[in-house]
Length: 286
Length: 135
Length: 207
Image (cartoon, rainbow over all chains, first blue to last red; front, side, top):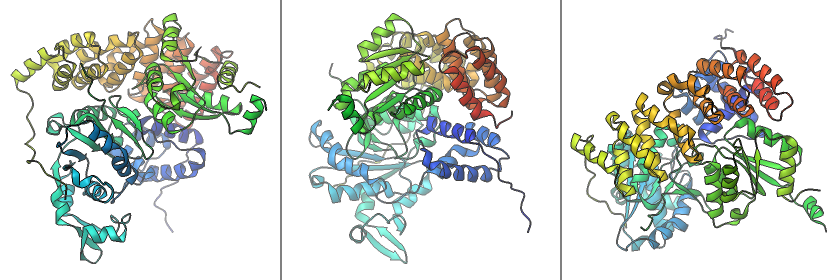
C-alpha cells in the first residue's frame, strides 16, 4: 500500500502552549488541560490540511492569516453551523430582560427595532420572530421591526425564500415546526409567508461605514459569530459602526465564543442570568 | 471554629489574575496554585469584568497596562457595579513606580499595590493576607 | 403578526464630497461630543485630515471620541498618522497609552521605521510598549530586534515584555539571548521563570 507521503508532523507541548496562547489572545477562547487531546487532534488536522511540513510553518501561516487559516482553525474548535434557536439563551435574555429595560426608556409608539447581522440563510432573524411570538407576552402590544442583513447575496436570497431542511429545524419542537412552517417535499419545509413578509432582508457590510450609515436607532443587534474572524482593525471599525447603529442604551449580542474584550471598549458589559450582553452607554443628560 | 478552620472546610480560595502578559499569568497561576489557591485568568479589564460578574472570586490581581481596558478603568468599573463584585479585594501589580500611581491605584479602589517583578513570597503572602487565608 | 417593515433602505451613500469633509474638519472642534464623534468617524482614512485630527486628539477628553479619532488616524495609516499617535505612548494616562498602542498595532508597516528608536527610548515604559508593537512586525525582524534589546537591556520589566513577545515570534535562534538574560537576572523573581517558559514554547522551531 502506498502512502501519499503525508507524515505526521511532530508537535511539542511547547508548540501547543504557543498556539493556545495565540488563540486565547485573539479570540478569548481557552481550553483547560483536559481538552489537550482535542486540541492536539484539531491542530494535527489543520497542519495536514494546510500541507504544513512543521508546526513552525503552520504557526507562521496562522499568524499571517494566510488563506483565512484563522477562520479554519476557529471553525475546527467551534461548531459554526446555523440552525433555528441557536444560542437561544440570548433570545431568552431578550424577552426576559432586554425588552422590558428598553421599553422603560422610550416613548410609546416607537417600534422596537432588532437587527440580525450577519443573518446568513435566515435562521437567526426568523428565530427572533418566532421566539418573540412564542415567548413574549407583550408581543401584540408593540410594533416590532426585524431587519436581517448579510454581505452574501446568495444567502440573503435563500433566507428570503425560506426553505429549510431537518438539520436547521433540529432544536424546534414538532409543534413549532407545524405552527410556522409548511411541508414542501421530502425533508424540506418552507417558513410561513407571514414570517417571510415580517423580516426585511438587506445586503450590508459591517466594515463599510457608508453602508452601515443607513442603519440607525436599533434597540438590539445580534452580531454573532462573525467578528471573531475579523482582524483587529476590522473588528474595531465594525464595533464603531455598530455603536452608531444602536440607540443609546441599546444592546448587542455576540456569539458564544466571542467577547468584547477582544473587540472594543465602546460597550459596557451587562450580566443577565441567561447571558452576557453588551450595551451602548445610555445618553448622558447635559 | 476559627477563621482558618472555617477556611479549611470550604472550597478553595479563588483568585482572578488579570494581565495581558501570558508569562505573568502563567507565573501567578503556578505560584498560587502551588500555594493551594484556585486561579482563573483574564487578559484585560473587559474580560475581567465579564468573569467577575459571572463567577465568584475572593481576590483579583490586576495589572495596569492592558489593551482596551486598563487596570484603573477596570477597578472603577468594578467599584461602580452594583453587585457583590463591587467589594472584591484588588491587588494591583504594576511596573509603575511613581507616587502618582500609588495614589491612582488607591483612588481607583485597590486594596494594595505591588511592583513588578513580583517575588513568589510577596505574591503568596499578599494574596493570603488579602483573602484572609493566613494560617 | 406584530412585525412591521419600514420603507426600503436607501442605496448606500457615497463617500463624502469635498464640502462635507470641510464641514467635518470644523466639526472636530464642536463643543458637542457627539458631533465631534461623527466628524472623526467621517474623516476616517482621509489623509489630509491627519493634522486636524492630531490637534483635536490632543484636546479631546471624552474617551470614546478619542477612540474614534485614533481609529480615524489608524485608517489613514501613513507616517503622519503614526507620528500623531506616538506621543501618547508617553502619556500619564494608562487608558490613552492603551488606546494608542491598539491603533498603532494595526499599522506594522508604517510603524516599522520607528521601531529602532522606540526600542532604544530612554523611557523604560516606552520600551515596554514598543515590544508590544514588535508583535505584529514580520516575525524574523521582530525576533531579531527583541534579541538585540535583550542583550543590552538592564530594566527587568522591559526584558519581561520582550520575552513575552518572543514567546510568540521567536524561534530556536532566540534561545541564546534568552538564556543570557536569565543568567543576568538569575537572582531576581520572575525573569528566570519567564525565560524557561518561553524557551519551552519556541524550542521546537527553527527560523
